[in-house]
Length: 181
Image (cartoon, rainbow, N blue to C red; front, side):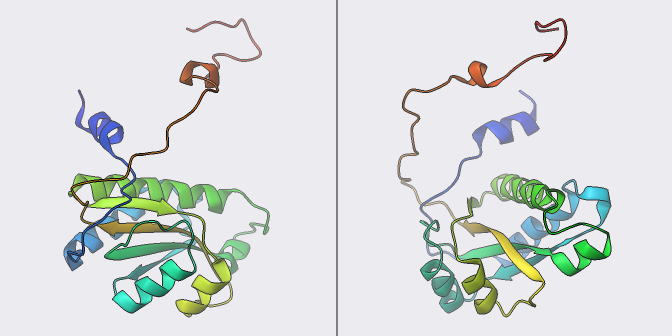
């Protein structure tokens, strides 16, 4: 199987991490990968805040109910709305949020590629995180990527109970002749 497809299929959200620190070069590698993610018009509307200081990581956990892991590092992906507006994006624009997702997906794959565990967190107080990180008013945190070394044992993932299959969620050639081509 192709290495890229293998990485996509084997990457998992890591919910249990060891206390071993993430090396600065590893953190830089993961951060650097975000610049290779697709971005609307290559405008770079995002800011990234790397957090490695243990007391600050603990404070982030306190305001992030979705942060189940105890990361050794975290990257907070933010949207710079002043910059977005300078390009004509209204506050309701979806593009900057889509770009948060592409950057996060790329960072998650990069972390996996260098042997780190990673997990995204979207359940957190944006106001509290902005305050903890002393972000300018126009820079809004949207997603946190937790990083660390995976623990040997991981909690079991959430299993789907009933509901649609993957094939039920995929549609082919809507509005036309139908069928798969």
